[in-house]
Length: 72
Image 1 (cartoon, rainbow, N blue to C red):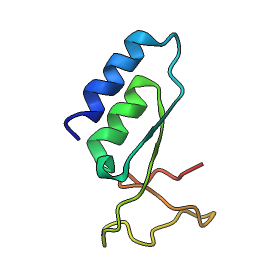
Image 2 (image 1 turned 135 degrees about the horizontal axis):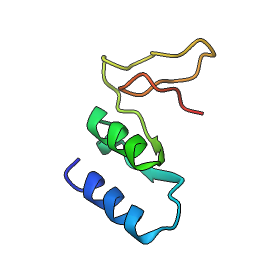
Image 3 (image 1 turned 30 degrees about the horizontal axis):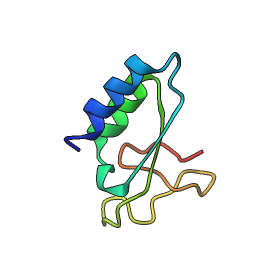
Image 4 (image 1 turned 180 degrees about the horizontal axis):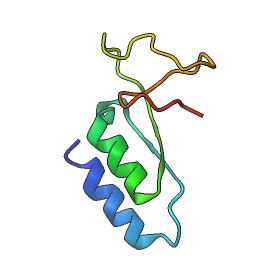
């Protein structure tokens, strides 16, 4: 997680309008999702295989991340 947030902040400065960010499952943490949304990104992060989020889905049977956001 130590690299993801500074990287996203720098990308915001370099890009005119950030849209999506695709990062590895090692960054599947609440702080990364929250900062990505705060900066205007739609994060695409592989899910970790943890009991905390293993098998959790929304009402459309779409997997959810650690902050219960559905993957679109």
